[in-house]
Image 1 (spheres, rainbow over the protein chains, first blue to last red):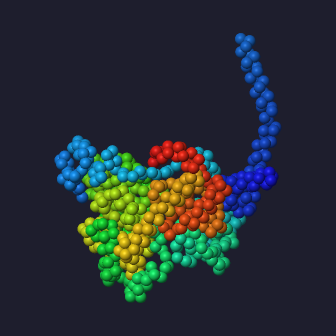
Image 2 (cartoon, helix red, strand yellow):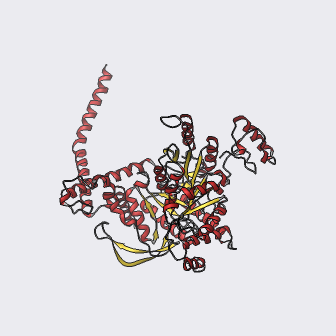
Image 3 (cartoon, rainbow over the protein chains, first blue to last red):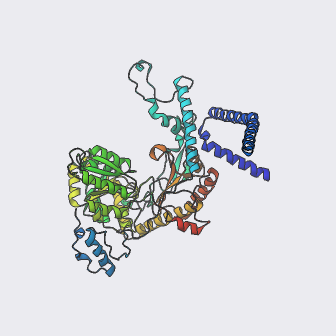
Length: 74
Length: 554
């Protein structure tokens, strides 16, 4: 019952995505193109987040600590 | 065109019997020299409107506009992609193209102008131009149509879809009927006169039927005389050039119909646009026109005419007639009122917006209307003072060159009008008007309760339901057809780009069951397509609804 609820909800979400981005109107090959492009963009975003975010966050924390440490000294 | 009661000497003769509070108003009249339309039963707070004028133009939440633009953006990108593929021969061209031999000449087809038509309209084109094969009554039959190549060509399967509920035809009073008893006189006239006229009004095309119809129209509207024409669009576009010319000023509402715009442009007069139904904007234009006169010579304008419609068919809004009439009297302008959708549909006895606001038809200089919408026929009329109509009989392009109305159609209008006025001995006409009012109010109330965004006045039978996103236009129309309901959806060129809508035309012939079927379907579809954007839905918070009735009307 629960899976049926979530599945139909997911289907509804998918329909909303189709309607909003006009992919409801596209021919099948256009849809393939559009979804591939979207998926590629999403993957690239996720990969960049995975690869760089810990490093960026770490160095940001370091510089923040240095700043507050330096201020305490003076 | 001066109204004698506007001359203010503190003593208005035909209002002797007014109550004390109206004499107080005439005291005001002494001060600023204008009168604001004294009404007989003394509205003590001095308002122009006898009943509340509630119009809704709710704005959707911001994310809706953003998502609409996202949709159009994706559509445009794919449009460019397809155009590129067509230009480079990767895809078959279905649009008009020149022959090889003509390639060196000036191009015939400017491709970019039709970008929107080619790339967005074509994808959802199956929702328009659907051929019907029965009378456009409350239900009708559709010919089934399929496409093999994504709407570039269609073919008919030969089957018909029967009894589709008709929410798109302008059949406000339900006179589009095939009942034999109702059409008895029309059949007799068809056998007596035939179908064609074969002449224009000024040559041999004026029949006794036209004279009878014109007298009836004048009596119906309460004016001196009227003239009828064979086509509603042509009534506007051919008669405005006869009334105004160079050196005149036309003040036209932003959202006027194409026939009014065409007539105004053909006349050669200067056209200025005021914001939709906005009397402050109009007053500013009037003052500028009178103070500054014509552009270079600074002479006074020969004529100032204001073009408005009774009900605007894309918005469902009703014109603010009382304020308009007081403005026109103050600044000595003329008023041309196009009652295409409002004649027969509003007013206690169906006489249009003039009756709806309780005003006299003498206040409007040119009353124009069509018989296409409420009377189930075709054609238009112009009514007003006898001098005006006599002038039009000689000077209108339509009278000189266009074929006049054909006799069976004239008889249909005569029988519909007699029914409305009660001259056929029954109260059927009045019942139809009342039924239309009931249906309109019920339909609008239920849609508001469900949470859709509806535009327009609460009393107008034209109900635009906002869809906003281009993807939903096609989905909405197709799914409604699957549920056996025919609707009209409108998109970009006819409406602003972010405000595409579905337009319902309520009819007196719709029964409560039909309206309930439609409303249930809309409820379901609204949930599935997520169309219920309204933040003022009535049912859950009645006190909130009362607050929102005072929301600004623009």
